[in-house]
Length: 211
Image (cartoon, rainbow, N blue to C red; front, side, top):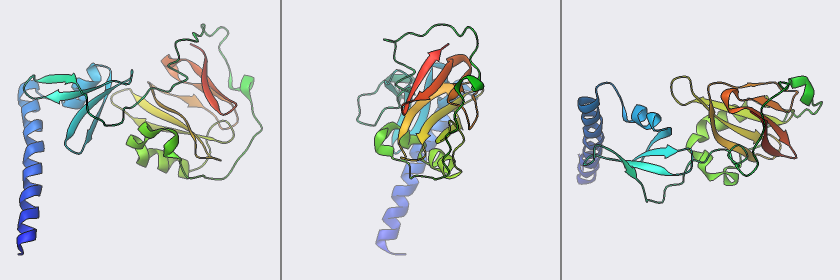
């Protein structure tokens, strides 16, 4: 075995031991509750990357796990933040209640696109955190509003994260909204996002119409 291989092995072992220490400490002090579950209780989304243990909040802020504090504290690093879908979080344009309830037929579209553009992650840097899931869903083709892809992934018990991508251009219209479930069809602009309300795609923008 060469000296380089030995050094590489030692570094790798050290990293594994570092991570295992966090896991064991978390389990010993909090039973079966993982850091991801504790993050979720704060209304955040857990992400492990590199040597950082981060909890991303829906308001754009992030927390880091502190072993000394045995909890999460404000994080001031430079990792990109996960943002809630901008249109959904625009409180300057409040929406009313849904009465009557919108239907898919109300927002029918005859538009149809069968292509598959490469996802342009430069249009939403935070979406890179779910690059694999988003890219895989876009590769399966359009499933929403004639030329868009609704990409959905699990984010915990009874929780689904989502992104809306233009299959023609690869633009990410929305990223980060979570719900207990979504309903949508390929020939309608309407998205039923459960407790989050109803949304439509209009002029290549994603916006909420009622809740």
